[in-house]
Length: 215
Image (cartoon, rainbow, N blue to C red; front, side, top):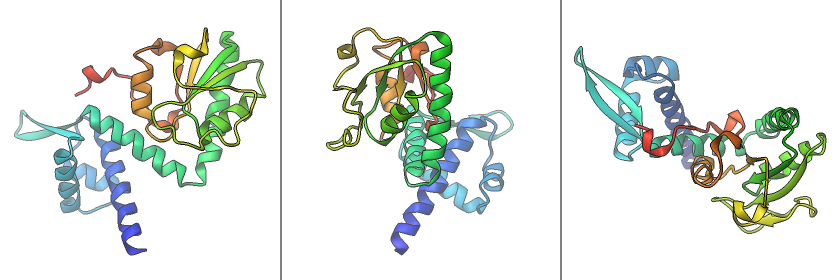
């Protein structure tokens, strides 16, 4: 149990640090320590780990200080850790219901009636239930990058499970429902589908900047 608790704390601190760096380019180690409520020395330790793992890049700037930036790997890890945390949290069902309803309502308002979900698993099942409240047609669930056997269990049998976006035919929008590796799924989906027609819930912490333009 101690090891599990330690791993949980490590993931929580890493996620908090990645979020802090992603939201504030002027972040300092001292301000990060205050924001996260941990010792300054611990911030330094985790920053070094994140740099070593390729999640954070450090650059020296004027006034003899350092600037911290998320790398493409850092953006992906932030999204992955967020999804992992939510998947273990009782907040997942509540947050996902609220935000998928918002997305589906926007689709209905835009006249987007043919939609597909990208990512099989719990989120696609929740989104499919929410979709029944709106005048739209879920044409398919695309398995996505993090799909594993059994993800389709419990899914509405009227919704086909497919392997690629192209198999869905003509759709108005694709809604991201991958909780395993959401940033990677979004990046790969955006290479074959218009980015302005990819809908993502806020809780997945998706970065829409193309990978080649990220720090």
